[in-house]
Image (cartoon, rainbow, N blue to C red; front, side, top):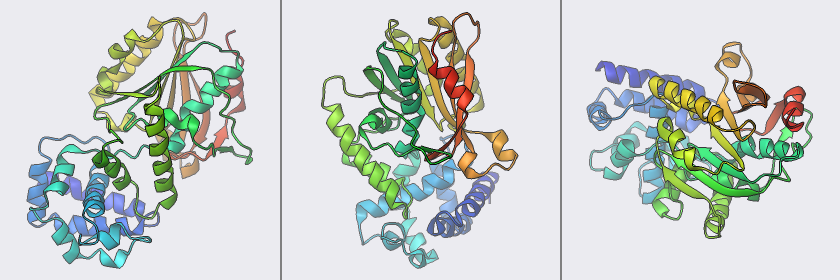
Length: 363
């Protein structure tokens, strides 16, 4: 294999190990895909991806799986991997080397188009707590100015309407985490390098394909969110989506109203940025906060905590919800880690001191 394919093979193997207990049919499929790289498929895959850059080690494996599942969902039972990827429950025994070879055939143009043009975009609505909770805390602090809500890396923008979905988050003691009431929201803006229009069946189908085959609860949340978004998008002041790379997003936001509060949210996007783009993004983020009055910009983040992972933290505490803002009388923005949680948050291990600091308002 070429050095490129050796890298892909390593990523497939690592992701297969990660999914062994979480999604066995995918782990089995990744092992077969790794074997297939040694044949004609490897050459075709390398040429398909020769113009693309991937920055997170899980991007290529998950894109391969989502593209296969998308093809199977759209084709139906006639697809060689339909039983393995679309049945309820998925039939891992149907994911054979022979079925995979048929699914990877060069004439399957939809599959290869997905590999060229798509990205894994799950729009997991449990991540909406990243903005709902801080927005509620700002309301508790006495904030009554209108919020402009901006989802950075919004995919289809479903988290922009999460205040119309059931709240299901609890703290470490099992008590509900309050996410209502909220200050008034005047604008809901989603920014993504390639936003998905869920009114387009191909877009909605791709979101479904990005849900793992056995995760029925997540698929149900997705369908509920698509329905809520469709209704809200037709109403005055509904969510808006715009295409923009995140490294270039902050100048775009300069036109936002200055007499209210801008609440930006990013959920598991940092690792998808190239190192130089990430540095540019973080610098522009800081400058945006400094260019506006204190406590008029809040940036809420849910990102994997690499240090916690290196220290052996369990998956339930492997991510952090952090709010960044500039306080009155301070030159630099501060960062409050409100809670540790899972990348798909359900239980929040809350830092009461950080929550109290955000809730008490201006000093």
